[in-house]
Length: 479
Image 1: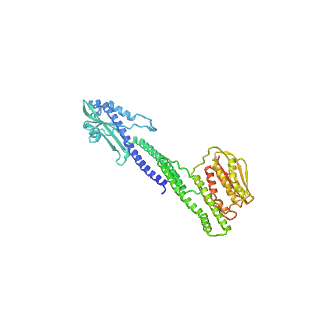
Image 2: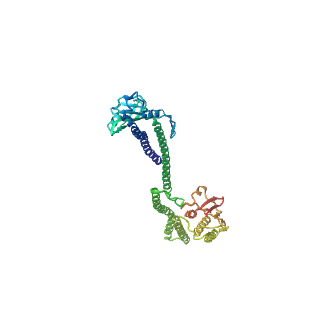
Image 3: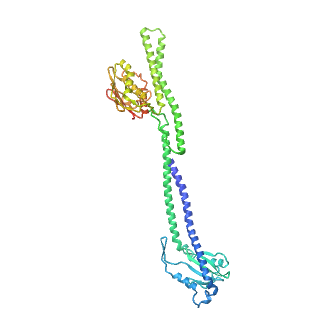
């Protein structure tokens, strides 16, 4: 399973478990909380009514023995309350009936008044609300009118009727729980909707965090893949990903590791390539030296001596260019001291190569003025000089090498046979070279590698063209 899916799966599990328990607690607490509030209000109501009824109970005006007597003031008031019209809107719900049932018991627990008139004369002394209140304790109970129906539950709260510091009866206030059930259900719906919304928002946050982490991890992965082997193109290494926290520490550690590995691979690659390139000239010098130890005709001795000098010069050119390329590859960017003129650079490069060109009867033509820009003059001169040297190797006698300067573009064109199409993509690799027109491979393959590295250091690019006949290299330097 991929890292992103694992993180997302783990987040959903943790978030789902937390949401389940939180919602469960909320929904489990709503109903008892509402009933606790209702009970608190009923306690106040029962005590107020008990105080109002105490005088009539003490005087006997509210008694079963007074059936024929006029109804007490308290009884009439309660019955008028029960029939009072009401139309109230409470937080979006319409209330159109008054739901309190009130009954009064004497000291023996017999009902002497019932607002609904259905329990007068009955013995309620065993009911918890009455029994506890008559003993001076807090009395309350919850009962169902229908045993199997939870919606038929009724809450009863009693208060003592006191006269001369004696409990002479109890007054109970009853209220059906269904009157508050709709408030409970609405609260539960709101909690569930809020919980679902919270879960959805948490999921979005989880997805966002997961994508953020995975994106940074993938950047680190791509960076590691891009630097796991030395670059044959000799381009600058990719920048270190800017990631926060521990991932940033990991990125910097990977960059330090890359530098150490590239240094080792760089040395190993150079040693292998240099060993390969040194084989031919060293073998030629050794063979010529062994032959020169014998008695040879003057012509042969001169030929072998010239071969020793030629191969020594080849070794010297190889070493010089290797040193130049190694210095360039250790740099990350050009360091111009002042704006450089392409015309001045081209003139200096042509002057340096003019002696060798004259030996081959090759003319050098510099046209255009080019631009002045933020380039390192020495490196630009070196690049143009290497292009001219390479063109001299491939140009025919009495040919012309054209160096054209237009803006920030340098174009060097020769009149040689060009380069095989299969080799175009590999030009610029270290030690890669193609046969000269005479069939020899006297080049080191480092000249174009140096040119390409200089272009990279200046943030530019190069283009290679076969002209049939002729070959053209065009350098575009960043301005």
